[in-house]
Image 1: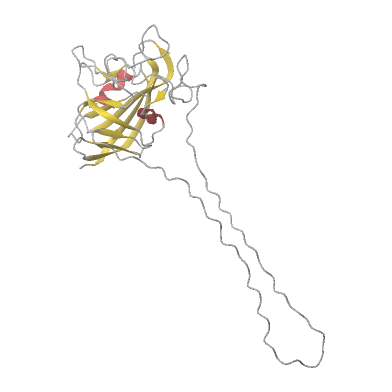
Image 2: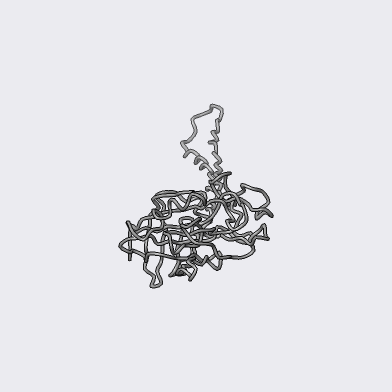
Length: 274
């Protein structure tokens, strides 16, 4: 995504140049099949190179390469058992005593198992209509955008939005492009998940009527922005099979009009519809 020339740290969304024509992120060129620029500011952690976003100058996080860890809660089960012995009384011999009933044996004492503590169940909020939900639960509101007069596609206004351009859901052909910020102002966006997503996982889109569209990830690709033009038609073209294409930025933060060096591009195929 575009970063002001005089700033080393993004401070708010900016419009990216044309897609496919040069570089991709959150803008799409009228003269090409895909977007350009950057889809997000800075700060998500990832290995050097193209494995994930890294901190920009100024630092979104205290150290480069650090990812937010998910807290896990483990329950400890403790069971205490006490075995009671049997006391046997021996009397010296004498005249045979009158038969008497033997004293009852002491019943073994066993403490009941300690109550177990279950790990808290993570509650996932119901998905709202008009949103896309990623496998880890990150959700963004879809904002339909078209190309402006100069041939660019406006980037999302906030972390919680994703720009939608191209094919409609379930179209007969063509890419439905969803572009979102990876992070902004020291906060990670839902599309940060694209750096951890794997083939076979599902992306769910709820249309404004509440219809549920399920897409399965078929391809995960990281491209240097200089490499994008050669792949734009294949990735974002409006011909060929229908597909959902999700895009964000990442890799090394280089500043200038590019922001991040790379783009993360996830392609998914439709597997079920309302």
